[in-house]
Length: 115
Length: 115
Image 1 (tube, rainbow over the protein chains, first blue to last red):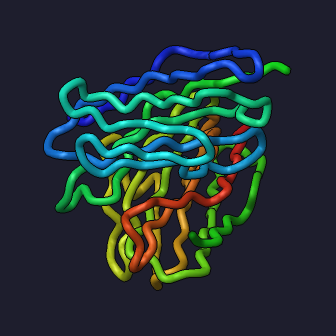
Image 2 (image 1 turned 180 degrees about the vertical axis):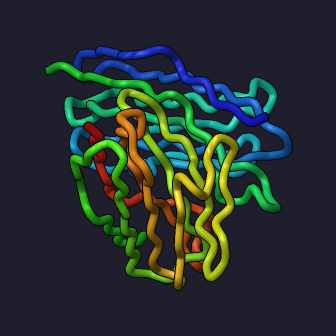
């Protein structure tokens, strides 16, 4: 079946540090991949996405590249800010047919950035 | 994007009672889904809300426990029936916009506590 595995958290960084949150997946076919973010007290927001191999999604300084050979979609940011403190979810959308639109989520990674 | 509202935003309910959660979108959507986020956990898909027909449930979820309606393109309800403390969760609706590129947007969630 489909599954998403994220690195264990929580992750604590100082401001301006480099961020990597690892995400690997198992899926049949060619899923689309997403990163969602949940800021404290807010709903889930789409951060970035990639729909095919070697695509790079980017938004707000965050990037992730769809690596089919390693079944990975790691999230990176070169210099984090305190305002990036949130829970980050990696997700895949099953490919086509009756599975279209259905998201499978990783367990989430809590990121805390200190000044 | 779209504006998605959910009612109620939170509730505290007695064991054995039922609660109906509403989801309203301000745009035309192709697909609507209901997810559950248990405390400290990731999101799990409950079902796909199908317009004018019975919802499609994921493994582990049944219609008697989580009846869903979707009378039109922009509105859906989820009922949590005969509640127990294990049903304490955040319930979220999500949508895929008509004419969009498959991105899924989430409502703010309904935080349910069962005592």
